[in-house]
Structure formats: C-alpha cells, structure tokens
Length: 205
Image (cartoon, rainbow, N blue to C red):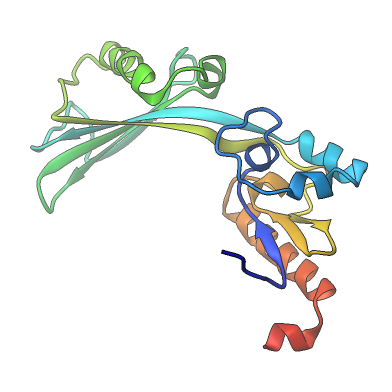
C-alpha cells in the first residue's frame, strides 16, 4: 500500500529512528539515506542522547498504607538502583498501587536486561529498601529504552527541517526538553516549519 502526504512529522526519539545508539524500534524506510546528504543535520541528529529507565507497578487488591500517607512519593537519590517510589490508594476499588522507577544510571548500565530480567532485581531492591512492603498481588514491569532526553538536538530548536522535498520534519522532546514546556515549544516550532514550507492553499485543503 502506498500513500502520499504533504508532510511527514517524526516525533519518535531521534536515536530510535536513526538507529545510532540502538536499532531497537527503528522505523522502516529510506529516509536516513536522504537525511545523510546533509552532513550537518545528520551529525546533529547523531548527537542526540536519551536516558533509559525500568519501572515496576505493584498492585495490591486491598487497601494498604505501609505507614505512608494516602498519596505518597519519595525519592532515593543515593540508592544505586531505585530512583523513586510513589503510592496511590484507590477509593473506587480499595486497591493500592505502587510505582517504582529505577535510577537512570543503573538502567543505562544494564540496558541489555529485558523487562523480565530486571523485574526480580527491582522487586528485591524495593523490598529491601522498604521492608514494610509485602509481596504484591500483581506485578507489571516495563522498560523504556528511550525515556527522556539527556542531550537534545543542538540549540534545542523545538523542531528541525530534515528534508525540504519531500517535506520531513523532526519534532518532539529530542529537539527540546522532556516536559510540558518542551512539548509546547516543539508544537509551535513544527507549525512554523510546515507553514513556511507548504503553500497556504495546501494547508486549507
């Protein structure tokens, strides 16, 4: 199946679509061949770096407090594995959910681990860190290979014109920062690039 577009906006993490630091999740197509014709843009894209992170979701079917407030969050900046823990007690079904996030440095050093491999390591670490916790009823593990931007596109422009013809725009937190302000900046920059490169008549169609 072939489709035609006036413009394509890539918002996936740059290392993911460039396949520089990892080919994991790389999208298909010959776009890299065309981008590589501009050495400056290609080099700038290749410099973008992301952090990785592993998380656990601990689900308890009944209300638990573990000596904490109803909505609890705590950071552990000095712990080698665990970065923070947040807890929420849900009044609708009386369940308790806990989110555990790894340190970025630990995740980056152990990125070869699958989410299944990391699961018992994180669980053991959190049970040792907070002994009041009991074994959960359900455990959900997740691995973000590309979590948050560590080194954005040079100049943090919000978005970048990667190809003029066909029109290809790079956007998202790769070109700014991983927060709401970065999202808004990227959206504005993307609109400006598209408006500058597509005739107004095309935009109105």
